[in-house]
Image (tube, rainbow, N blue to C red; front, side, top):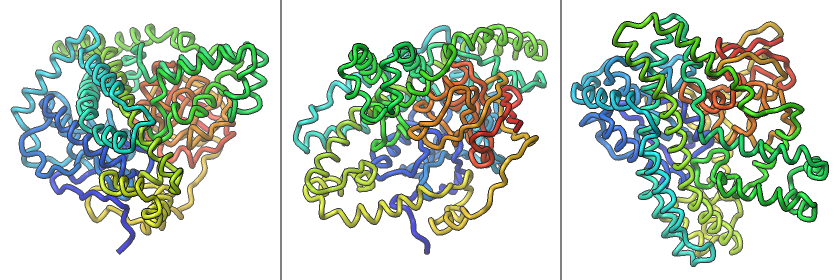
Length: 572
């Protein structure tokens, strides 16, 4: 038998198909025991609660309390495609295929095969009520304010970081109860945003031009995931206009905040940057993982984004790029609306008005669901620091491989007693991190061991050449040309230049400061509801998603043309 990961789920016979689609953005890396027990398990409970409230879940859907919607196989997190398709199967006028397009985007998933219990009249009626209410939305829904209130309350309860170990541990272990309702809010807004966007996607398809949905959805304005980039750009402009600050950045971002302390503009920069971190410090790569880097604990990530932005020789303001956004939307409406019947026209008109509010709500509740993790990450890192001081390891990810409610306390009391366990699991973590998990898993037999996964990594990838056209899905409209820059980690984007085409495996909001100086964005994984798409729309940047193997087929320095409406990348 091969080597398993330290935590493994079991494929549910009722809901067998799982995918890395969509979840690859928010859990791109191998999961830790800490992230699984304190994050994934309460997230599963919250997801079920949200879908029950919306009418999507039907009695008898699950026979176990173990995570099914969020699966963990071969070290990586998966979403249960079989169950999430029920949102389309049970929603009047929708379909399993519509959910695939909205959420998962890439590859050819196993086709939907109806099973007994899939359809539910009770669920359909409840979902219809949800849809009608959502289409009537004329302002930001109250659920957003609820997430802000709950998050602020949890932050206020954080103990001082010099509190005793036990007090910090109690706070750490209290996280799931506070996280659940905030994450449930995010799942509700995500589902509703998908339903409302789906009305526009269906209308575009009915008109014979599915790519027009990018214009119909357009920029919502006020989307928090895009605000990070705009706030950083305001700081970058000040750096660009000050020769002393520009010279300091030319020396690199490591140690920058200390080096500029005596500069005339240094204090102003430090104040503005501290304000940015206070507002947005919760973000970072892999930001659903409690042991992950954030702008709060690794400010160099944000400084690197400022460094890239300040090098741009022209205005990067989104308002410049979005100048024709409304005109494009109105032209798309004029093309699509005549193809709809009377009832569909009514829903289409409502969806056009409602979609900005649900796009904003989805990103705002997501932002709060990550924000509520910030004080937990601060507490956890303090515990890691104390463990290292007592002879343990300094790497937060390595310590997170311990089971939090049993092994972590023992580690803090006697770090040497867990040294061999941490070393063994860290080696296994490195092996899983070096492989690419399968995009779809449809049975227990398809859950691969690390030996199987390593054996699959030997296949050669055929590089794209001049004249090749890579095809994905439309993300954000527009056409742009530029040289490719393949970036696998936002922390390693030191060489990224303004007006290059950012090619990434996937992106979460922590990547979005790199969007602003980019000519266009291309990602391996993504769908209509992906964060890359939502943020690209807000910033007015052409974007193509679900381009299988883009980071391997495209090479840094290639000149390409990206067509965000057609969903193509042409190698020039």
